[in-house]
Amino acid sequence: QVQLVESGGGLVQPGGSQRLSCAASGRMLSLNVMSWYRQAPGKERDLVATITRGGTANYAESVKGRFTISSDDAKNTFYLQMDSLKPEDTAVYYCKAEARLYNNAYYNAWGQGTQVTVSS
Image 1 (cartoon, rainbow, N blue to C red):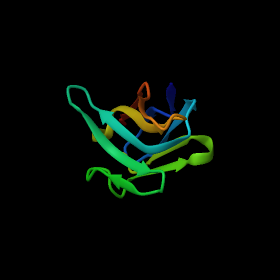
Image 2 (image 1 turned 180 degrees about the vertical axis):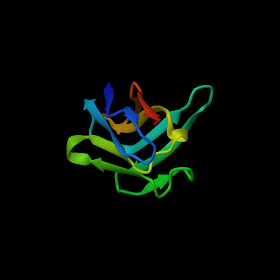
Image 3 (image 1 turned 90 degrees about the vertical axis):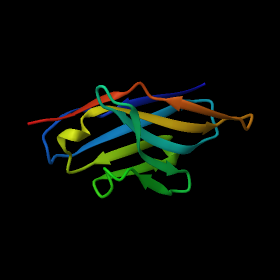
């Protein structure tokens, strides 16, 4: 199986920055599609950003120009750099990755979630 472990959440002031990390471990060939989602209290889990192994990134309109998703394939780790944070960015952030396994099957793994709170 593939496990994802997130780190980097916490409290940040409006206008500040924070970087989330998601490290993958387990028996896999590669991470193909890596994503960040977020879920605010009482709301559905929404897609924030996605990056493919080839480096193509896509973002939700609400974070374009403020968030940057990146990956380090050698470390099987991907990141979400969040700048110009707003109170409405407050949520639990989850990472998700599609892993290619040694039998050429694909496995979708989720991180445990990390709280990001934007408040003065």
